Length: 257
Image (cartoon, rainbow, N blue to C red):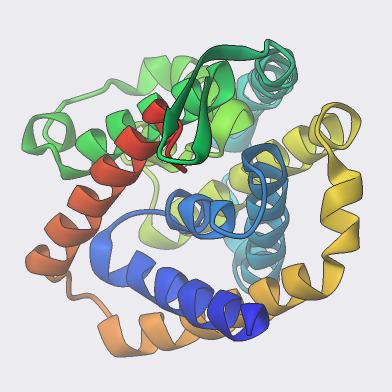
């Protein structure tokens, strides 16, 4: 039954990335947290994310803009290592508060607090008209790389800053897609290497079949979402998904998830 639930929720989550404007990792993390402990869910999300980006890389690598990749990608790589290392430290920082609801024992941990706060923040960023209208100069590409890498390392929320800065880099549409994809891969490879040392990947390996189902249905959801959407964004769905992410972020902070 859990395989069916993972398949359906990941399929829906991956498909919604095209309708909502949110990235695959943003939606997959709360999905996987329903089936794995949060540290394992972060690792599982990273693996699905890098698998999906490898699939895209084969289609768009010819359009990479090398100079933009270097200016953005090198700071992103360094800060992804820093961010993912910090995640390991936060994961080992223990519990903030323990409380009970009925017979259920709940824990507010530093990790859940950080991930929940970032989830709420990036849901707000993706939905904010003010942020989307901010003019960021091309000379700050390295700053964008550092921000994207750092937050990508901590929680996988790398897309908001990457898109905000790269859209100002003077790239063609094809160059933007190709360069953005390879930068995402750089961050993913960096953080997975650190996660493997600091998070509980043993628990993840014990659920490898469940993870494989997640990867396969993420591909399917991504493909059909793109086919159905093309260039249309449905604001109602975007706002609904954003509201759900706000709620889930709050549940993480309170230790209810």
